[in-house]
Length: 179
Image (cartoon, rainbow, N blue to C red; front, side, top):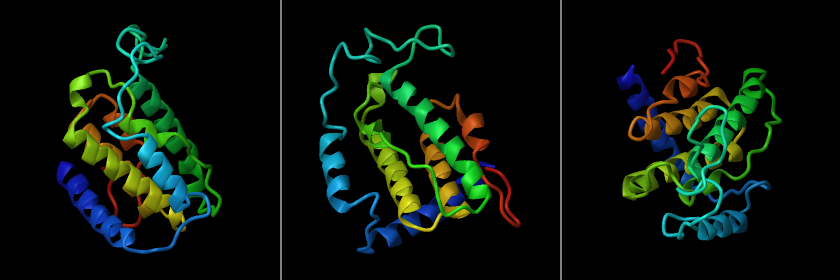
């Protein structure tokens, strides 16, 4: 199973690399919007103490009795967003519900501040690139699964708890098997 995920992620990253060389832009994601959000939220962005989800101010949660970090709260939103998109992909709809705020993955308080480093940065950039690719092309099972694979790639390195929830997002195609 892990080899299948790694192989798919490698193929997807190759596609992202090829897609990144194209100069087309999406009306929903203009280059100026992407540049502005990238500058506003990076791993170098200082985290603000005391905000909801910071270490001394966890966000109340029905799932976590200790409360959520800003990042875990965001990731629950990201999961819900992908769950909302999935039926549209299955129905082969050309209209996909929009997602917003995912770029905050790079500048949100994690449960463990020690994870905010180069590996997490690279994995979060991979996720954001896969999401941008998905949003800038005709929605397909493969482009959607690329976003899911990016989630799995990160969660294989950090916080493996929600992997089973992420795997449920995967859309099987002809001859495909789940991650």
